[in-house]
Amino acid sequence: MRVELLNYELPPERIAQHPALEREAARLLVVPRGGDAPTHHTIADLPGLVPEGALIVVNDTRVIPARLHGQKADTGGKVEIFLVRRVGTRSIEVTPGAPETRDVAVWRALGKASKSLKFGSDVIVGRLNIRLIGRADDDGLLEVGLWTSTGESVDDVVRELGHVPLPPYIKRDDLATDADRYQTVFARVDGAIAAPTAGLHLTRPLIGRLAIRGCELAMVTLHVGLGTFQPVTVADLDDHPMHAEPLNVSLTTANAIAKARAEDRAVVAVGTTVARALESAADPNRPGHVLPTTGETRLLIQPGYSFKVVDHLLTNFHLPKSTLLAMVCALAGTERVLDAYKLAVDEKYRFYSYGDAMLLTRAEARMGAT
Image 1 (cartoon, rainbow, N blue to C red):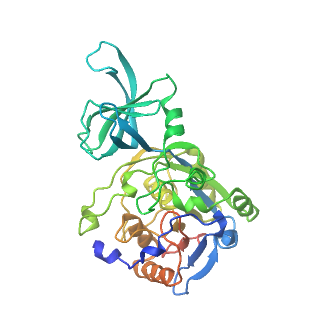
Image 2: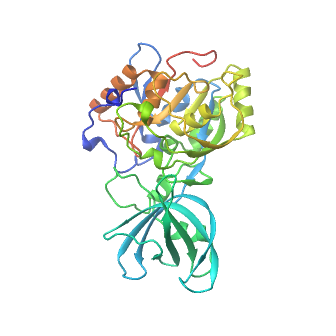
Image 3: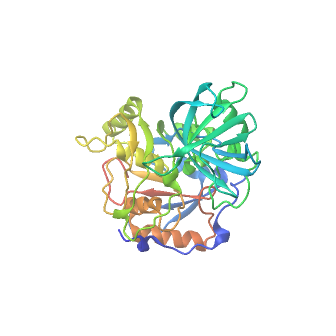
């Protein structure tokens, strides 16, 4: 698909810089199948808007405080290290040239400083030491080794000293409240560097009200990575290189989807990350079902893709010319989605990670999915 077809005009003031005061107070634009006009609601109305008995699938990834502010060990210059993903452990010389070695946690990362970073040098973040090892051959990211000067767990110290990795279009430093609000209430598996933002709107009382409607909850894990922020720089999405993101679709979730299909109940994906995970795990021999899957996905969903699992999608508003907007257009139709985006701009909806949401239905109906 030509990327220019995924463009829309967005005034900067429509980009949310803070979340709604309450999660359920965010606005919700419902875009039905067919020619009916979108309707305006709030997230609190969601239990009455999804099909009765639907299977609600959420992403249980947990955002790590990936942004670390430190100083160069040799000059004291300020450095920001942005952790992307852990890749293992490695034995290094803690003091260069000395015989003492230790095992350190190795991460892929981004680095930023006023002057160039030198491989082999160290960055100090409180009790955390970061060695700049080199640059990875496969993706060009920095490789850094992390250890603590006190013998504490690296993960524990990162959780204490790291900052919430708010996306670049939020033009402020993170606040204490972001540690809670930039995390879903069902987050449990560390690994994401960005929140699965549609899930930020859900609360435990809301999940309870969905249960009263006969809706069940299932979980997948997809750790949101750099691909979320990676701009599309090609003219055609076919030429866009997708970053891999780790995913896990459990046997429990596969069985929950099989049960929903047997009972003609719809599958509602809470967020594009869930949609990507489910479609990546789609069973090629049983339409509408998934296989238990653990690994990585590079699936790029764009108009022309035929959804195999997802019937409805709850999602925030996405950047122009992005792969996430392409996925939403693939589900509900490009013209329909872009018309809804224009309406949302006109009606002063709030956009992006801390913004409002949409509820969409697949353009092509499936039994039990209406």
